Length: 164
Image 1: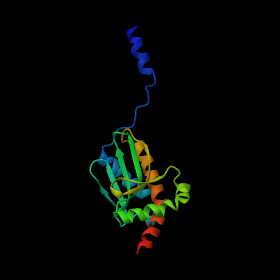
Image 2: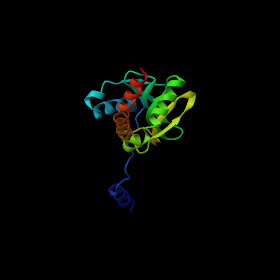
Image 3: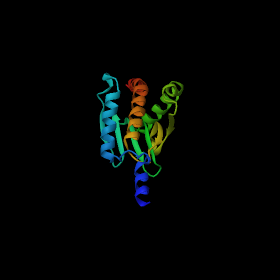
Image 4: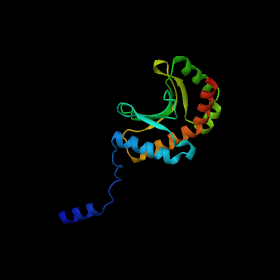
């Protein structure tokens, strides 16, 4: 009987294994590469910085106005969005600029939320489930961040030109 039990167990389909975990460095390296590959050629000249821990910032020459991917480990969520982290006056101007264009923004990013945030900053963002960092989450994050950049960068460029 024991041989039968072992044989039958071996022939049963095992539950699907979750994808292997990615460490934060590998996750954000894959995110950067994936976003670069997904963007149109004229948008691939961005710069990135890694914050402490589970954070990556991407910008096009204005570091205070950057796209961000931030893994909130306690909440099991990954935030992707455009952050306004300049002076209080600049952030307020950006908040009002984008608030006036939320119909246009929502057409391309239906889950996007715009809000004032910590330290006088503002953000235009969404979150997605990310209890763990793996290939599934990185693929979703690449798609989301690329959509944010393609949708919002022309508006951000317009806002930045209006400040000159």
